[in-house]
Picture (tube, rainbow, N blue to C red):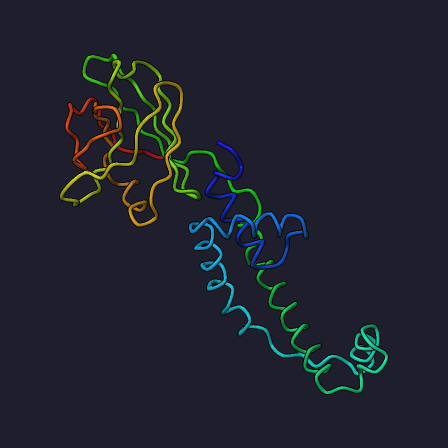
Length: 227
């Protein structure tokens, strides 16, 4: 998976974009993606809404006259005499203070999180021919499935399902790769149910279940436990 496809990386970049922490080249590249990526725009809007209340927590501070005059004079020798210049400076200082508060508060988010799986489930078929190990990475709402033994027969695929506690029907989480590992991003609205729910693997036709429910045999099930 590339950095561009990584959900957490995009989430962090969206926060950096809103806080104006990107350099000019990164910002231009990010804005190029924004034009065509609705999911990325949604992340930006979410961070804008998240940061907006922080501005209300910043107490207005009137800087000394000498500081205001020095800043305004650096823009224009006559700017310090203009009323709009004073308003601009106060607004700029307030914005900078709000950004600083947001950056300190969100620093742990912008730094790389712990992407080590915190919950694990073992899934094995009754005959032992298929064995999978699934781990949950809570910060990114991802499930990583390692295919230890076995595989789908030719012309079929393995599909992962979540049966949330108290749910009436299973929900498809996606198809597994033919071998090796598979990384699946769980939608935010159902992610809380992963920890206490049951995951299952079924055998499906190419492309996955056409009905939204398992159509082939359920080969293995499991629940997550703390690592």
